Length: 401
Image (cartoon, rainbow, N blue to C red; front, side, top):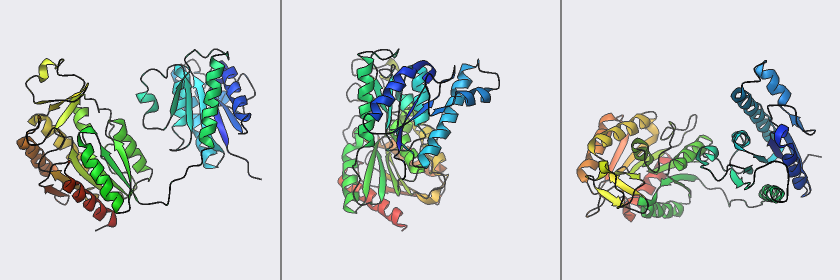
């Protein structure tokens, strides 16, 4: 009889053995088997773990056990291999860990090898801090421990028990998507929401499933990662605004070198629209405009404001986009809305500047491979007619027309 998949309990059992043993008991009381994996780097597990990686880590370091950073990265590497192998054999249903700063780094780094949809719960003493780099593009659930993790008491026990309940509930979830349709990834952000909604409606009418990503830095990178994993039949990159914010240190910065690059080893057509390439979004209000931006065209949004990009910045962005799109020109097309790239970039809008938009397109054409098609449409990016055109072009690209 095939064994039931287990929830992996992974942590530094040399220092947090009591807490992880408590998690094991809480999970097993709910009828789900566990697999305990010690990634502690100071000494063997405080209890009989199913897998104790300490001896292997010690051997790998060959006497350099005093190098804490190397020990931690070695433990991560060994644990990632264990988790990946066990998952591929159908033996892992989810993962949970608990710890402080180092434990959180260890736990979340190891969780990254498990694919989207596999439950990942991290109970952390530092969860209330900025977790952008810790969570990254993964579906990791962070749970703040509130109190420090030094044994199990009436408060830490309550938190750990509920975390165990959370991961068990996730593992037992039964929802499944309806009949599989071809999937289109759609990037957008607040300034082009109306257009994105119309594109979604048009593509769904063509029987596609539309998966939207907030182009906020992490969102664009998550889309690229899932594209590499084979989730999408097409990419409608409606917002490449992240490049502008990356250049200007804006709110939606944080992209990596993979943004806008074709997914390696996969054939995924991409339609690129310069959504949001008129501006960078920075964190200031009408009352706190930095001196260096007071002479620019400005759009006050909420706690953030948009600055109109100048020609030098626009030329830099056009060169960056062209460099990425030159990699696989046969699978890329560009669609340009001639009447404006965002909500604020329209007739009578605060960022309206057709000459700079036209300059962006000219610079892009100058740098791109001539075989890459650029379509210029006499619409605004949020026009319903532009959305229908984008959806039709995406459909044609997916169908191979």
